[in-house]
Image (tube, rainbow, N blue to C red; front, side, top):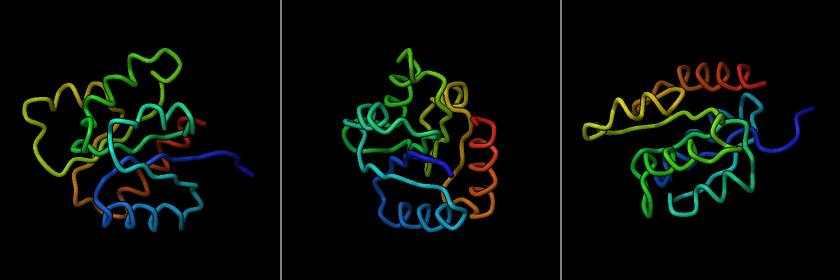
Length: 125
């Protein structure tokens, strides 16, 4: 049996949170949620999830800023990150693609989300 948090979802849209929680919990993944970017890195440090799902647009601190800080943090730099984006990345698409392991556009296909998460978690095992 797995212990700890499989996935930390940092997302501020309640409908996306509920959808992701429903989709991934059906597959047995344990998911925690945080709603804004300013405390996101401390949540990651506390929970040490196996996968971080991070929205680009967050209140407090953008997902891009969180991702950049994560990649500079010595003991968290290798954490697998799936970025979710609803809009263009404002010219930062290459930076996101380089720093994140995967990127999914919202609205995403449920089966694609399940497949990507399974691939990322099995690859991180």
